[in-house]
Image 1: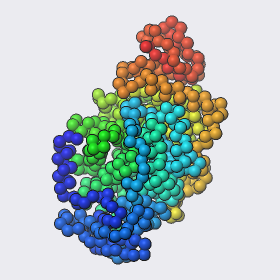
Image 2: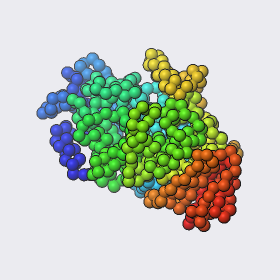
Image 3: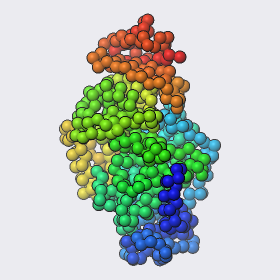
Length: 603
């Protein structure tokens, strides 16, 4: 931790409450500056809390001890003797967002992962999954049964979409409201711990998607307690978190403590921070930097390699630049530019934000520069966008052909397998897995799953459900989707259609794609290490081919409908390791069949 950030955090620690936030079961505390009185309802009994003395104005904490309280007991806070609400830091909401909170003893779980050490992120193969659709049962426990498939595939890191308690029994999780409580329908705290422990037992690290830019509307009681939100900013999904206004000290603690909770008490190995471009903070120490500092402190204390990955639409290298160089010090971020360029090159779609991308030239630019928009004019945004990564290693970026967003934010939830033939799916995979980025798959992508991944919700409030549906329809207008193609998020069928069908892997066409991914992952892990190596990209827009040299590997892709001859004169002595079609070296030329990819080596 650099000295400047350390001194800032030390000064903050002097003025905040000194007792441990992660307290024994019989002790209760809550930050509630908007309350005139606070108490705890435990069973049928009500116990008053007292205001902590000697705290700055606006930093009102209410505390108390209840002898006999223990793990498994349900409780609610009562504000001003009238309003019954769940704990803002509830560890478990067994009956959903409106029900009581339940006491959890995090020390009671028997962990068996003391010897586990994750693969370095720069050498990782990441697999994004959604708990509710990853298995038929859609629970933490049932996901354990499919971990062996991920191990066989060559995955090193499992990235789980948000699991913090959200409304209803099904959803993407980005409208969570109880940030400390694993979703009840997935299996609650014990279920998540069993899954993480099982992942570690099979050598898999776990990254958890967390949302700190906003909270969902249903079951969101935080404003009853204090100024958690601000009207100075607005996100596309609702009120912004208050990270830089009056009362923001404890809001920042609320988020930082949550990050530490997942990493410490659930043994999670890293966090994916959702849509950080919608986190607004003008403080001298940005909340992202503060999170990075505190996670670094936990890393030093625990000896565990913990990582932070941002989702960002900013194309701003400050996010992943080291703090001693003026950055926030996060470890990596998603790279949508690479996805968009590759998607346009292979599907020729140019609606919505795809209008900014021009196929192979932008694929090459993304591979070479990391960002396509690194200070260029964006037609979609109608302004200049981004700045260069300069000398930052490209392993600070995740590269992918599919994510939950890029599939689920389509009207019908089409995967790449619905938009491309098998040959082009293989070309996409070859470019992703031999890229200079950390490669990532979305669940089912490895076998070209035919099931869609659609946006689904389970809101009990009919007005909210209708508002969500209308918002989705409006978003699709930018892409020109017909209204009849829109899938109702509230329909249970929309959710059920999105569940993976593992039986597909046994069919020849899907098995062919699966084996291609296995071979590519094996090649990457054998030939490409954390040392990036030389990168050189050549392409022809007219002839529709691209050749990428990355370290010892050469990836050649023919996107044309006919046979292609590509000069390999600069790669004397190269030999073909893997090919999706016919690939033959004839002197200094590589002869490739139509719509095919080949991986060669110059070793």
